[in-house]
Length: 334
Ligand code: TYM
Image (cartoon, rainbow, N blue to C red; front, side):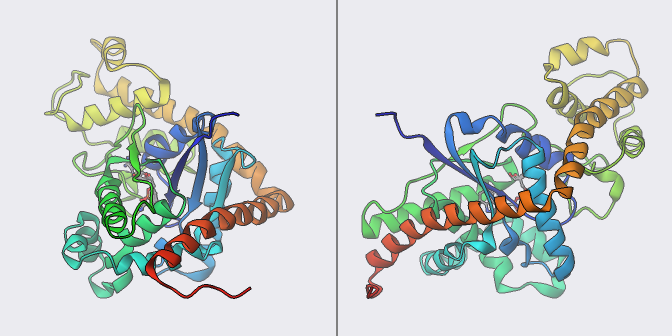
């Protein structure tokens, strides 16, 4: 009998415009993983409402993200691509896990601290328990591996702690997930402040390359990228701006740091920024074309949404029933 594939789970928020950071740090690296893993990629619309959303816009962005997954090369026959809100097990398991997570653990989450500073007018309980929903996402599918950027590692650590705590009480219920960090481009920084991550919620549009930006916009943003007063293209912790551009360039072209440094030896930042801009634009153009094509095919996309939600629900309900039984919820009468 063929050996069963390990399970992989990841997700993205349908909030804001996705950036080159999301693509290079996450999505792009996911494409070939289904050869080795049984893959679940979720559009985490339930996470998105921790910050106030316009309903029509959320719906539209969630669909755009699902289409983007497919456009990036995730075959929905081989990868389960679905909306979190179509699988009620996420919210149900999150409630249960809330009761096994400590306030102190959640208070330590840096994303909570950042987001509550940013949305001081709406520090809701969901924003606080957001990492528990993320833990539920992962544990519901008994994921072995979770590909995420470094900014999500703290949440993954918490997921492991919650799972271990739960297993300590009830036996082996959850698999303990491991992080899966892509080879390159795991941490793309803001073009305007290279000590911060490139974020879709950045207020300065020049700080981020959005996946739907046109070539001129991309090149202009790279031209304006903050660097330093030297002129040498060299990867170094004291050159965060240039190092970030090198990271982007090598993630877009597949070159190594040494190759990039050599290619731009003796050339100025102007040439380098232009080359990075062109490489990024060339990378995104086919993706944008594919998004446009797929967006026209409503019947196909609707079919993917329906079939994959069914698949995801089937798998999720197996874990959920097991958990409910372990903690003592009454059995269902059939
Ligand atoms: P989100 O939507 O903020 O980001 C989606 C993915 O993109 C990665 N990422 C980056 N990688 C490199 N450089 C950057 N500048 C950059 N910005 C974002 C993130 O690390 C992430 O992998 N809570 C999660 C979504 C989520 C999830 C999950 C992920 C919910 N449930 C379960 C994995 C498993 C989030 O907000 O990611």
